[in-house]
Image (cartoon, rainbow, N blue to C red; front, side, top):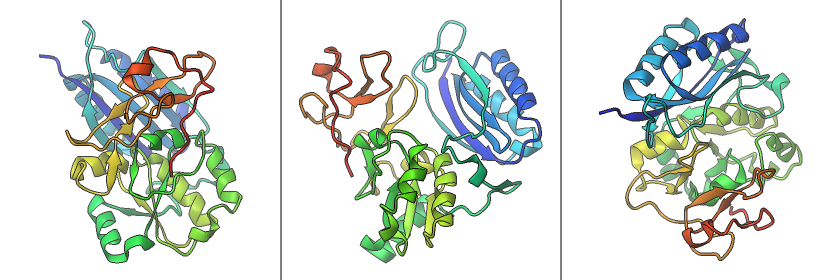
Length: 301
């Protein structure tokens, strides 16, 4: 029986010829019937690919044979289904591109990368170390969400600070505005889906005078794998594919509210207007009513 799997991965490492990496990765994925999104830059690679389990395993093995990628951070999750050719139905196609940044903060000139990863980023904390930090320092610890604000509407860490940003590029302006300068003397734990956004965000915060910055190693995915819904995480995890969300147990909290009626829900859908990229929290009753992009639930913090 074919088993659908999805692989989320990244590594920051200097790459001399990103376009050659792009061509190799495209050909490798096509040969294995994989779909997904891969970004390559001079600073590394970031991807999410899905397909049949053995094909994804072979992809990972072949990619890690390249010396610069041998230590890349990976997470596995369940795919929903495959077509008759074994291609993932969680992704519409395969996209492999070269970009200035593998995560788009709009600040490529600020990022410094060497063979060990991002230079000047926050200290990595495992899920256990995060729990220990909170146990030792209590409410002094600040969880800082490194995702788009709408993602936090269905799931976030308890009492997290959620900046009101619609995309990752807005973080630089938010930090430079001084809105969070009052956190500079506190222990700040940045977190995001798989960890990559916080590699950059934590370095941006460090360079702006936040003197005790951490990043959750492996992101929400790794925390959920370890503690499910019995730790400090609350709700569902938004993901950028047709699954829309992941839950870590059968007792995940429902913290979202329908943008139309306010009913508790963790379901999300794209705005009905094809020109609009807004994601909305919408209950099952109103999911079929095509809510307009002018309808928004307030960002929670």
